[in-house]
Length: 316
Image (cartoon, rainbow, N blue to C red; front, side, top):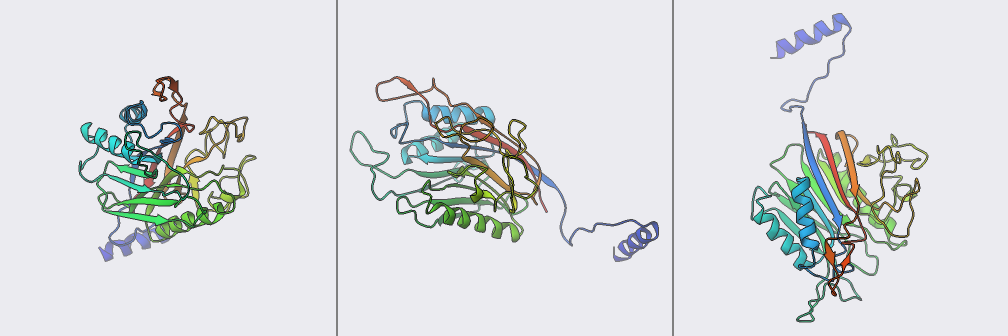
């Protein structure tokens, strides 16, 4: 093998060619994954209900889009367990006993996810579901915003090549604490990437693509009128959208405005530019005929849109 390699290099030198040599013991390849994310407003819009249509809306969308990874924000514990059971019943995970993680975000001054029958309440949180059985879990508490214990929740997938991790997070909306939380998440993702891993992260970042706080996230390759001055290592998987290049498509339908005459975009899916081969993302209108309030009247299922993305990554 050494003689063959030497012969190839010598021949290349004669012909003036450049030869790329893979590291010993490695094999170049790619893998494609589908990601599905939704901030479900499990308490604010759905009052901790598992029967008002929200759980069915989640399971219906997942069944239709068939992702490999699911990220939920603002999901109540009862709703998380109902989704877990629904995915088990549908045979979605490869391992029915090892595919889901939930991390609560306790609130210092609010009763959330209250049980109408008992009056007990539980904090909502973030959750991930993986088609592939996780081999490890990271539960990282972010710098305090004085309100909720915000988290970065990740699962590592040893069965998949390339040191794969899937993460979710929900960044504070409080301006004073937001920079520290964003920096904490970005630094951790960069460390895992520098160590040779492939990390995909979804969540409600409460920060829009054109905000200067994300300049250290986006790669300089993203340089448009609606998102420039970037110095980071990542692509947000909607930054090629022709609707608003560099920015993407709105993920909310509230009063807060974004770019290109759209509502705000705060639900983001990230991957390192160095790992990406191709990517695409889409946001879907909020259902208004699936979820009901306590009076049985139809309401929007959330104040956020469902986001789904497909990405192909290198697998060294």
